[in-house]
Length: 168
Image (cartoon, rainbow, N blue to C red; front, side):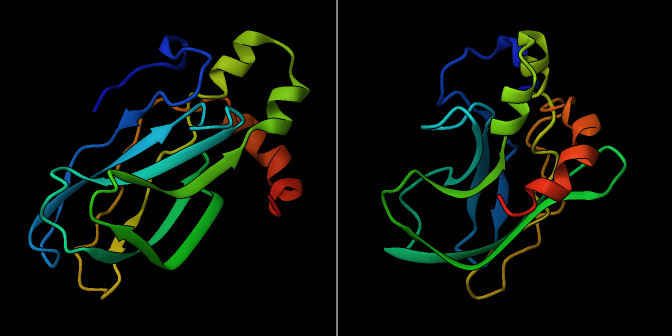
């Protein structure tokens, strides 16, 4: 996993940080990884996360992936949670967005300082707690670190903005 700071990211979308690989024994021992897009895939104001198979020839034609993902603040509290029982992934699809983790629209627009905006991309996806397949037999992948320094700025902003942004 690359441990790059936000300043190394361009201001365009589609640049990602990749997690270490993890193995799902119940899916024919396939290897998977997560990608975090701090500046989004299509919209740079939405941080996105994708799931992909390392070698995309081993999975069946279609599989269902269930997941539970959350972002933690520095104080350990949960700042965002999302859970889905079934997400269809077809063979040949390298990646699929599993969660748009946080909309940084308000944060970015409330603070005009470019350095502040840059540091806002320094701590958003600390943990994706569990990745399970649709049959609920996969190994639990605990605390996959997508990046050590994505959204450091969120630690201070999260307490102020979480309550009003819960519905995002």
